[in-house]
Length: 342
Image (cartoon, rainbow, N blue to C red):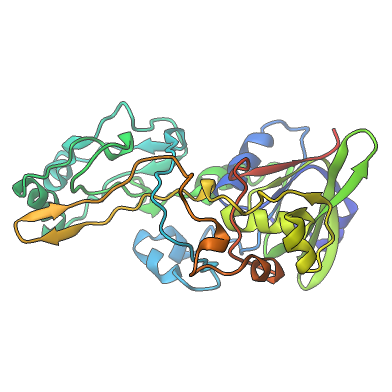
Protein backbone atom coordinates (compact mmCIF):
# COMPACT_ATOMS: atom_id res chain seq x y z
CA UNK A 1 0.00 0.00 0.00
CA UNK A 2 1.49 3.32 -1.06
CA UNK A 3 -0.19 6.51 0.20
CA UNK A 4 -0.42 9.42 -2.21
CA UNK A 5 1.97 12.35 -1.85
CA UNK A 6 -0.88 14.60 -0.73
CA UNK A 7 -2.09 12.17 1.94
CA UNK A 8 1.43 11.98 3.39
CA UNK A 9 1.97 15.72 3.69
CA UNK A 10 -1.49 16.24 5.18
CA UNK A 11 -0.97 13.64 7.90
CA UNK A 12 1.25 13.29 10.92
CA UNK A 13 2.19 9.94 12.34
CA UNK A 14 3.15 8.76 15.79
CA UNK A 15 6.24 7.03 14.43
CA UNK A 16 8.07 7.44 11.14
CA UNK A 17 10.30 4.46 10.38
CA UNK A 18 13.05 5.14 7.86
CA UNK A 19 13.85 1.87 6.11
CA UNK A 20 11.57 -1.04 5.28
CA UNK A 21 14.13 -3.78 5.74
CA UNK A 22 14.55 -6.34 8.48
CA UNK A 23 14.66 -3.96 11.46
CA UNK A 24 12.08 -1.51 10.12
CA UNK A 25 9.44 -4.11 9.28
CA UNK A 26 9.81 -5.86 12.63
CA UNK A 27 9.19 -2.54 14.37
CA UNK A 28 6.24 -1.73 12.12
CA UNK A 29 4.70 -5.11 12.90
CA UNK A 30 5.12 -4.73 16.65
CA UNK A 31 4.11 -1.07 16.96
CA UNK A 32 0.95 -1.32 14.85
CA UNK A 33 -0.33 -4.09 17.12
CA UNK A 34 -1.66 -1.13 19.09
CA UNK A 35 -4.49 0.13 16.86
CA UNK A 36 -4.26 3.71 18.09
CA UNK A 37 -0.62 4.09 17.02
CA UNK A 38 -0.15 5.46 13.49
CA UNK A 39 3.00 4.33 11.64
CA UNK A 40 4.60 5.38 8.37
CA UNK A 41 7.36 3.24 6.89
CA UNK A 42 9.51 4.92 4.23
CA UNK A 43 11.39 2.51 1.98
CA UNK A 44 13.73 3.40 -0.87
CA UNK A 45 13.13 0.12 -2.70
CA UNK A 46 10.06 -1.07 -4.56
CA UNK A 47 7.33 -3.42 -3.37
CA UNK A 48 8.74 -6.83 -4.30
CA UNK A 49 6.61 -9.17 -2.23
CA UNK A 50 5.61 -11.06 -5.39
CA UNK A 51 8.89 -10.70 -7.28
CA UNK A 52 10.17 -14.17 -8.36
CA UNK A 53 13.75 -13.06 -7.77
CA UNK A 54 12.86 -12.56 -4.11
CA UNK A 55 10.45 -15.43 -3.50
CA UNK A 56 12.44 -18.09 -5.39
CA UNK A 57 15.52 -19.15 -3.38
CA UNK A 58 17.50 -20.23 -6.45
CA UNK A 59 17.19 -16.80 -8.08
CA UNK A 60 18.70 -14.85 -5.19
CA UNK A 61 22.07 -14.43 -6.90
CA UNK A 62 20.39 -12.58 -9.79
CA UNK A 63 19.83 -9.66 -7.42
CA UNK A 64 23.50 -9.27 -6.53
CA UNK A 65 24.94 -5.91 -7.69
CA UNK A 66 21.69 -5.11 -9.50
CA UNK A 67 20.88 -1.50 -8.46
CA UNK A 68 17.16 -2.32 -8.58
CA UNK A 69 17.70 -4.70 -5.65
CA UNK A 70 21.14 -4.10 -4.19
CA UNK A 71 22.86 -0.98 -2.81
CA UNK A 72 26.17 -2.67 -3.71
CA UNK A 73 27.94 -1.28 -0.67
CA UNK A 74 31.42 -2.60 0.08
CA UNK A 75 33.16 -2.91 3.41
CA UNK A 76 36.27 -4.67 4.65
CA UNK A 77 36.73 -7.97 6.53
CA UNK A 78 36.54 -7.61 10.32
CA UNK A 79 37.49 -10.33 12.72
CA UNK A 80 34.39 -10.21 14.87
CA UNK A 81 31.38 -12.43 15.34
CA UNK A 82 27.90 -10.99 15.22
CA UNK A 83 25.61 -11.57 18.15
CA UNK A 84 23.00 -14.12 17.14
CA UNK A 85 19.35 -13.57 17.91
CA UNK A 86 17.42 -16.79 17.54
CA UNK A 87 13.94 -15.54 18.39
CA UNK A 88 13.40 -14.30 14.84
CA UNK A 89 13.11 -17.75 13.27
CA UNK A 90 11.43 -21.15 13.39
CA UNK A 91 13.60 -24.18 12.70
CA UNK A 92 11.93 -26.91 10.64
CA UNK A 93 13.29 -30.41 11.15
CA UNK A 94 14.58 -32.14 8.01
CA UNK A 95 13.32 -35.49 6.82
CA UNK A 96 15.33 -38.54 7.87
CA UNK A 97 16.66 -38.91 4.32
CA UNK A 98 17.90 -35.32 4.25
CA UNK A 99 19.32 -35.54 7.78
CA UNK A 100 21.32 -38.65 6.82
CA UNK A 101 22.49 -37.19 3.51
CA UNK A 102 23.60 -33.81 4.89
CA UNK A 103 24.81 -35.03 8.27
CA UNK A 104 22.61 -32.69 10.31
CA UNK A 105 23.24 -34.50 13.60
CA UNK A 106 25.10 -31.44 14.85
CA UNK A 107 21.84 -29.49 15.22
CA UNK A 108 21.20 -28.55 18.85
CA UNK A 109 17.49 -27.90 19.07
CA UNK A 110 17.94 -26.02 22.35
CA UNK A 111 19.60 -23.16 20.48
CA UNK A 112 17.32 -23.22 17.44
CA UNK A 113 14.35 -20.89 17.25
CA UNK A 114 10.87 -22.37 17.43
CA UNK A 115 8.52 -19.39 17.55
CA UNK A 116 9.90 -16.77 15.15
CA UNK A 117 8.21 -15.65 11.92
CA UNK A 118 11.18 -16.41 9.63
CA UNK A 119 11.24 -20.04 8.52
CA UNK A 120 14.55 -21.93 8.32
CA UNK A 121 15.04 -25.35 6.79
CA UNK A 122 17.41 -27.68 4.97
CA UNK A 123 16.81 -28.22 1.25
CA UNK A 124 15.08 -31.50 0.56
CA UNK A 125 16.65 -31.51 -2.89
CA UNK A 126 20.37 -32.24 -2.72
CA UNK A 127 23.04 -33.86 -4.81
CA UNK A 128 26.23 -35.81 -4.14
CA UNK A 129 28.18 -32.67 -3.23
CA UNK A 130 25.92 -31.95 -0.26
CA UNK A 131 26.56 -35.42 1.12
CA UNK A 132 30.30 -35.38 0.33
CA UNK A 133 30.88 -32.04 2.06
CA UNK A 134 30.44 -33.13 5.72
CA UNK A 135 31.86 -36.59 5.01
CA UNK A 136 35.06 -35.02 3.65
CA UNK A 137 35.63 -33.03 6.82
CA UNK A 138 34.90 -36.11 8.91
CA UNK A 139 37.43 -38.15 6.91
CA UNK A 140 39.97 -35.37 7.47
CA UNK A 141 39.39 -35.83 11.20
CA UNK A 142 37.76 -32.42 11.32
CA UNK A 143 34.08 -33.09 12.02
CA UNK A 144 31.82 -30.29 13.14
CA UNK A 145 32.30 -29.89 16.87
CA UNK A 146 28.90 -28.37 17.76
CA UNK A 147 25.93 -26.44 16.40
CA UNK A 148 27.32 -23.31 14.67
CA UNK A 149 24.70 -21.19 16.43
CA UNK A 150 26.60 -21.73 19.67
CA UNK A 151 29.37 -19.58 18.20
CA UNK A 152 32.17 -21.95 19.16
CA UNK A 153 32.08 -24.65 16.51
CA UNK A 154 34.60 -25.62 13.86
CA UNK A 155 34.41 -27.99 10.92
CA UNK A 156 32.36 -28.39 7.78
CA UNK A 157 28.56 -28.46 7.68
CA UNK A 158 25.54 -27.78 5.49
CA UNK A 159 23.94 -24.52 6.53
CA UNK A 160 20.28 -23.77 7.03
CA UNK A 161 18.39 -21.71 4.47
CA UNK A 162 15.65 -19.16 5.16
CA UNK A 163 13.18 -21.11 3.06
CA UNK A 164 9.62 -21.98 4.04
CA UNK A 165 9.24 -25.77 3.58
CA UNK A 166 5.48 -25.46 3.06
CA UNK A 167 5.86 -23.68 -0.29
CA UNK A 168 9.67 -23.62 -0.88
CA UNK A 169 9.67 -19.85 -1.16
CA UNK A 170 12.20 -17.64 0.54
CA UNK A 171 11.16 -16.46 3.99
CA UNK A 172 12.14 -12.85 4.68
CA UNK A 173 11.11 -9.76 6.63
CA UNK A 174 8.65 -8.66 3.95
CA UNK A 175 6.76 -11.93 3.82
CA UNK A 176 7.00 -12.77 7.53
CA UNK A 177 6.62 -9.40 9.26
CA UNK A 178 4.98 -7.00 6.80
CA UNK A 179 2.62 -9.03 4.62
CA UNK A 180 0.55 -10.43 7.53
CA UNK A 181 -0.18 -6.92 8.84
CA UNK A 182 -0.13 -4.88 5.61
CA UNK A 183 -3.87 -4.23 5.81
CA UNK A 184 -3.79 -2.67 9.26
CA UNK A 185 -5.40 0.78 8.91
CA UNK A 186 -2.78 2.36 11.18
CA UNK A 187 0.14 1.19 8.98
CA UNK A 188 1.19 2.93 5.78
CA UNK A 189 4.12 2.01 3.56
CA UNK A 190 5.64 4.47 1.12
CA UNK A 191 7.96 2.71 -1.35
CA UNK A 192 10.40 4.12 -3.93
CA UNK A 193 10.98 7.00 -1.53
CA UNK A 194 14.23 8.46 -0.20
CA UNK A 195 14.62 10.27 3.10
CA UNK A 196 16.95 13.22 2.59
CA UNK A 197 17.10 14.69 6.07
CA UNK A 198 15.71 14.45 9.60
CA UNK A 199 13.94 17.66 10.62
CA UNK A 200 15.53 18.69 13.92
CA UNK A 201 14.45 21.51 16.21
CA UNK A 202 15.89 23.06 19.37
CA UNK A 203 13.48 22.75 22.30
CA UNK A 204 13.80 24.88 25.43
CA UNK A 205 12.96 21.88 27.63
CA UNK A 206 13.87 18.75 25.64
CA UNK A 207 17.02 19.79 23.77
CA UNK A 208 17.27 18.72 20.13
CA UNK A 209 14.13 16.90 19.02
CA UNK A 210 13.14 15.22 15.74
CA UNK A 211 10.03 16.78 14.25
CA UNK A 212 9.86 14.67 11.09
CA UNK A 213 11.71 14.00 7.83
CA UNK A 214 12.31 15.53 4.44
CA UNK A 215 11.67 12.93 1.76
CA UNK A 216 11.76 12.62 -2.01
CA UNK A 217 8.97 10.71 -3.74
CA UNK A 218 8.45 10.62 -7.52
CA UNK A 219 11.10 13.31 -7.86
CA UNK A 220 9.27 15.72 -5.54
CA UNK A 221 10.76 16.79 -2.19
CA UNK A 222 8.32 17.14 0.69
CA UNK A 223 8.12 16.68 4.43
CA UNK A 224 6.26 14.47 6.87
CA UNK A 225 5.86 15.07 10.60
CA UNK A 226 6.13 12.67 13.55
CA UNK A 227 4.25 13.20 16.80
CA UNK A 228 6.48 10.91 18.86
CA UNK A 229 9.60 9.48 17.23
CA UNK A 230 11.63 9.17 14.07
CA UNK A 231 13.24 5.73 14.02
CA UNK A 232 16.21 5.09 11.74
CA UNK A 233 16.37 1.55 10.34
CA UNK A 234 18.32 2.35 7.20
CA UNK A 235 21.17 -0.04 7.95
CA UNK A 236 24.66 0.23 9.37
CA UNK A 237 25.83 2.45 6.50
CA UNK A 238 22.91 4.73 5.73
CA UNK A 239 21.54 5.34 9.25
CA UNK A 240 24.71 7.16 10.36
CA UNK A 241 24.96 8.82 6.96
CA UNK A 242 21.45 10.23 7.39
CA UNK A 243 22.43 11.51 10.84
CA UNK A 244 25.35 13.36 9.25
CA UNK A 245 23.21 14.80 6.46
CA UNK A 246 20.86 16.05 9.20
CA UNK A 247 23.65 17.80 11.11
CA UNK A 248 24.57 15.17 13.70
CA UNK A 249 28.21 14.10 13.48
CA UNK A 250 31.79 15.27 13.61
CA UNK A 251 32.01 19.06 13.36
CA UNK A 252 35.19 18.76 11.30
CA UNK A 253 33.62 16.50 8.70
CA UNK A 254 30.27 18.27 8.48
CA UNK A 255 31.79 21.74 8.17
CA UNK A 256 34.10 20.50 5.42
CA UNK A 257 31.05 19.19 3.54
CA UNK A 258 28.98 22.32 4.02
CA UNK A 259 26.45 20.65 6.34
CA UNK A 260 25.06 22.83 9.14
CA UNK A 261 26.20 21.39 12.47
CA UNK A 262 23.42 20.77 14.99
CA UNK A 263 24.95 18.15 17.29
CA UNK A 264 28.71 17.66 17.44
CA UNK A 265 29.17 13.92 17.89
CA UNK A 266 32.53 12.64 16.60
CA UNK A 267 31.51 9.03 17.27
CA UNK A 268 29.05 8.88 14.36
CA UNK A 269 30.51 6.49 11.74
CA UNK A 270 33.79 6.16 13.61
CA UNK A 271 33.41 2.72 15.19
CA UNK A 272 32.39 -0.46 13.34
CA UNK A 273 30.77 -2.16 16.35
CA UNK A 274 27.54 -2.71 14.41
CA UNK A 275 29.39 -4.19 11.44
CA UNK A 276 30.78 -7.22 13.24
CA UNK A 277 31.46 -10.00 10.80
CA UNK A 278 32.80 -13.47 11.16
CA UNK A 279 35.95 -13.81 9.13
CA UNK A 280 36.01 -17.49 8.31
CA UNK A 281 38.56 -18.70 5.79
CA UNK A 282 39.37 -22.28 4.92
CA UNK A 283 42.86 -23.03 3.67
CA UNK A 284 43.51 -26.51 2.28
CA UNK A 285 47.11 -27.71 2.51
CA UNK A 286 48.62 -31.14 1.85
CA UNK A 287 47.42 -33.56 4.52
CA UNK A 288 45.97 -30.82 6.71
CA UNK A 289 43.24 -28.23 6.96
CA UNK A 290 43.47 -24.83 8.62
CA UNK A 291 40.50 -22.79 9.74
CA UNK A 292 41.49 -19.33 11.00
CA UNK A 293 38.49 -18.02 12.90
CA UNK A 294 37.86 -15.25 15.36
CA UNK A 295 34.98 -15.23 17.82
CA UNK A 296 35.99 -12.21 19.87
CA UNK A 297 33.67 -9.25 20.33
CA UNK A 298 36.53 -6.94 21.20
CA UNK A 299 36.78 -4.18 18.57
CA UNK A 300 39.44 -2.05 20.24
CA UNK A 301 42.10 -2.95 17.68
CA UNK A 302 39.90 -2.52 14.62
CA UNK A 303 40.83 0.33 12.27
CA UNK A 304 38.57 3.34 12.02
CA UNK A 305 37.03 4.38 8.73
CA UNK A 306 39.80 6.90 8.05
CA UNK A 307 42.45 4.22 8.60
CA UNK A 308 41.06 1.81 6.01
CA UNK A 309 42.95 2.30 2.72
CA UNK A 310 40.22 0.71 0.60
CA UNK A 311 37.36 2.66 2.13
CA UNK A 312 35.79 5.83 0.78
CA UNK A 313 36.78 8.96 2.66
CA UNK A 314 34.39 10.31 5.27
CA UNK A 315 33.93 13.57 3.40
CA UNK A 316 33.04 11.78 0.15
CA UNK A 317 30.62 9.57 2.03
CA UNK A 318 28.67 12.53 3.41
CA UNK A 319 28.57 14.27 0.04
CA UNK A 320 26.89 11.34 -1.63
CA UNK A 321 23.12 11.77 -1.73
CA UNK A 322 22.42 8.03 -1.46
CA UNK A 323 25.01 5.70 -0.02
CA UNK A 324 28.45 6.11 1.39
CA UNK A 325 31.07 4.41 3.48
CA UNK A 326 30.06 5.80 6.83
CA UNK A 327 30.03 3.50 9.84
CA UNK A 328 27.79 3.52 12.85
CA UNK A 329 28.27 5.02 16.29
CA UNK A 330 29.37 2.65 19.07
CA UNK A 331 26.22 3.49 21.01
CA UNK A 332 23.87 3.21 18.08
CA UNK A 333 22.15 0.06 16.91
CA UNK A 334 20.48 -1.35 13.84
CA UNK A 335 17.21 0.45 14.31
CA UNK A 336 18.64 3.70 15.66
CA UNK A 337 16.11 5.97 17.38
CA UNK A 338 16.08 9.76 17.43
CA UNK A 339 13.78 10.92 20.23
CA UNK A 340 10.98 13.30 19.36
CA UNK A 341 8.26 14.98 21.40
CA UNK A 342 5.89 12.78 23.38
